[in-house]
Image (tube, rainbow, N blue to C red; front, side):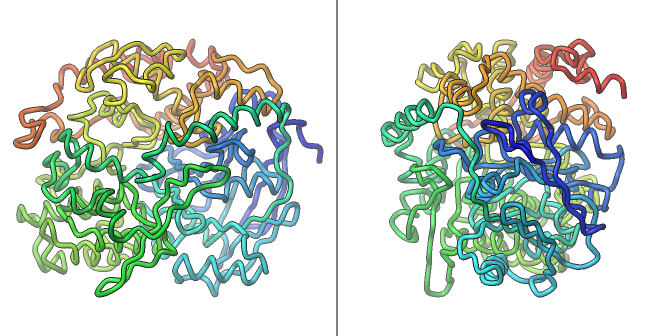
Length: 622
């Protein structure tokens, strides 16, 4: 099969687990120019090929791994790829991105994406070595840790550097927020993609490739890469030194660190779990992703009463807050142990932490008994946190209920607990506080995957003059605007920034490598040889948010599902933001402004003219 000349491999691999068959197809230049890869590619195939209303954990759901046009090229920050399916956690569109090396290896094997269909009648894994694709028995791997499985597959294949994307025991047990991991340290964490993979009896995908994508203008890409390799030490030095954990103390000082299930924004034990404490105690080394010199990943190790295995990396900011401050826990070693357990068992640390903090608040308010909880489930009890991680992954005790997600758990526990479940569309909130970052709250509400911080705006970055603000001016961003402002101006900023984030989920590139939009445009032109305009690139981002929106509307979601829980409209009682809350009227007005700027009606439904402008008129014919 002929490749497209540059950028794309023009090969999409289908694997039908029911039939035990594989096939390859070529989407063609027109398709790639409109979708680039990643989220837009996934959303296109899910909308086109899934029946409305199907069971997310049934055999008719499809699981799609997709790189982007830059995945696997030598570009700094090109190590990411996406996974998508109908989400068992939300019942709506679901996807997640991860860094590492798996996506690059898949593209080097000659595939832009894999569509996995059907369900095996026994545990299997998929082996891909360039054109050789096999569905192999994985009965001996079922029930094992992710570390055991990776070692076993590499030994079986005699490939010590084969890249393995896999689920853990949580995915096997269909925990609704089970994740997929590659290289044990990189996670497709959100939307429950691990449960979908487990429902198909697919334990892992192992890839080895030898055919990197061809570059149209390698000398131009080399020059751009040279700029980043020379300048990242000044542009992203903190990421190398501290990783994302640097965010924790800054947010705590600002009053926006989620604490005790988002009841507070300031944690008295923050210094015990922040970056300086990690660096001084348990940090062993720093690692990174394919083609990236920044090396922002933490690797930690602890010995003594609690052993933390460095094979599973170390906690990032989201985990430190979700298992730490949001559970009222300031024991860094036990938070790191919780991270290791989640990574070994295949659990999303964000949803896991929020589910546990929800249960802790229910316990303290008398909605859960100690008999139901199986332990003294108070905020600050690190041993209870570790106990519940195991219970959730194995669906035992209270974990059986929490494994369904906080929305479902609150529905089971009763109406008094509904407002304690910190979720949007069924997906638990990340560790960013809307009472500090107001438009981020609107972004949570409209996110197609449920609450998400990645394809969103972080208002504090654009609240004062900065290089970050200057970089996004080509997207039409003006400012600066106060972080707590909700207005038409802020809605415009949210649309521009989040649309660009949706676009970078198509390329698929890392948010932490500070490429400007203008540099990214030059990069894509250099890789493909196509004269992409900025308008075309933003339209890719608009398709990447519009198609998932259409998917969700077809599944029965409406504008009423674009909500935030009442807690965020109630003022903080203490901390730097004491007395601060979102204004419900301003929130509603900004939400309507977002709809209008996106070309949607007042119920959040894309207008026919919007679809035609994006080349999605085929949706109208359905």
